[in-house]
Amino acid sequence: MASWPRFRALWIYRFHKYTHRLGKVWSFLRKYLYLRLLKARLGNRRIVAIILSEQMGDIIACEPVAREVRRQHPHEYIIWVVREPYLELVRYHPDLDGFLIEKCPSERDWLLKAGVYDVVYNMHISHRKCRYCGGDPVNPTADKLGLTFDNYYDQGDLLYVFSQAAGLPALTDDPKMYIPDSVRSQVASLHLPPRPIVIHCQSSHVLRDWPAEHWNQLVSWLLANYPHSIVEVGLQPVVNLEHPRFRSLCGQLNLLETAAVIEQARLFIGIDSGPAHMANAGHIDGVILLGQLFNFVRYLPYSGRYKRGDGVTIVNNIGHPCAELPYAWVQRAVEQRLGQPKLV
Image 1: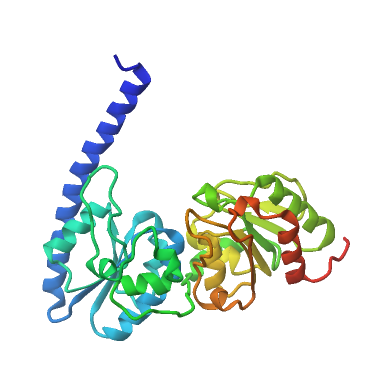
Image 2 (image 1 turned 90 degrees about the horizontal axis):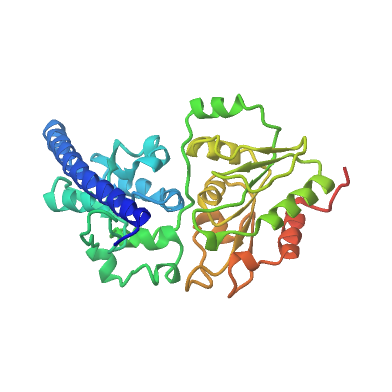
């Protein structure tokens, strides 16, 4: 007989599974009706869907797709299909007419098969499934190019690869972020020091991370040798120092507020993550810590400025995960960006 914890976990999973599936049906019906009514209201204008619903860094990197689609469809109604946690990344884009919040990949597949979009640019690689719905969403364009989750990083940066998966030319533009004045005003109310060093220490995947003790050592060295203030951003704090020139904003900012903090930085130091893409889009000088990710040894996810090597130092111990980057390498890269230490 199954133990109580296993029995409980099973029924919690089943509860989420069935409520999710019921919610998906209702969500699909509402969106189907909304899009049909929208088509009727638009008359001769077509609905053009750009589909890249997650992750943060992917969406930021692929922002130029919106500009390219607007160039190709100057008079059509263009929407971006996105998961709710990432909505702010596309909400204010001047080349978009709207957005559609996606519940899950299975719902996306239903809407595609229902034919409610007139033109589709789907950047997702095939076989990314919903954990509750089953199904197997496919992207024939990506399949024709031979793109899979096992090889896509070997083909180029995120924008270069995903734009082709959508059936567009291989794009190489610099990404941009669109931050409304209301967000900048909110960040101004935090009274941050001018031009701080901004750090981001923890990603959504442990294979991208650098050890916490190294981060604490690096921040201690910076505070002892440079006059600049340091601000940590992200979900969970990693640096545990108390110092008048160090401030943690972890867990206190939404996505655009994080971007607005980063765009004020004199230097961004971070691992491969959404905030690193924000720094790239904001033309902020950076020190980016990379390492082997699964079978990807020499991958570089950034297009534009960081891909060209402008204003960025990529620190990578080729063939080793980020966690094995020697501390001295990172300190040296930061010193090269900031100049010789100035004792404070």
